[in-house]
Amino acid sequence: MAAVTRSCRPWGSLLGLFGLVSAAAAAWDLASLRCNLGAFCECDFRPDLPGLECDLAQHLAGQHLAKALVVKALKAFVRDPAPTKPLVLSLHGWTGTGKSYVSSLLAHYLFQGGLRSPRVHHFSPVIHFPHPSHVERYKKDLKSWVQGNLTACGRSLFLFDEMDKMPPGLMEVLRPFLGSSWVVYGTNYRKAIFIFIRWLLTLGHHGRAPPRRSGALPPTAAAPRPALRAQRAGPAGPGAEG
Image (cartoon, rainbow, N blue to C red; front, top):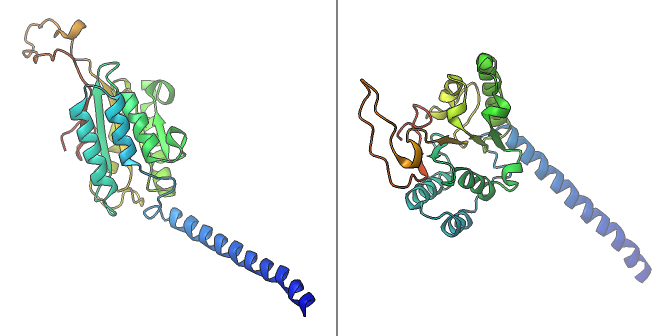
């Protein structure tokens, strides 16, 4: 009887292991199916808002308004299980004010792989859109890229660097993705995040406004130290007031 009992244990263990493997496979298939549906997929979206808030407080000096707006917008967006439109952030300021640093932190604390996550897409005009004469082709490629990745996973981040260097008219193709419609081109996109980074070029050297030209509007007063500014972009597109 003891021998029989011992001989049964391996088979019982194997059957239990087979059950666990089958359950894991079924769970993987279900997760894969949910990701293919796009709207239900969280993929490697693992937001750590306390960590982000702490890192911003420790390493981003002098940008209190920008930090407050970014954290507030992210908290409202992440805690909403069914947002009505994607989160669109516009970061603009001079070199050294923290635009790229903040965007890298957002990717790091929102996605498990950070900037290396397959759900984080970083666009540079110098690398991806170097020839303004090819803007029509770029429009088609960009629309296809955004639509395809949102179809694969609704939790995607699209980061556009150096907006001031983008070919004129290119960003128009993104307008349908930034509003509050439920579906665009057959793709549910309301959980996506779009970040636009722009340099401030309106001020002259050392923060002084450029000389006034004949017939030009009076220049606005320059701040003593230009800072990073963040704002929600509305349905009209990047940089619009939300």
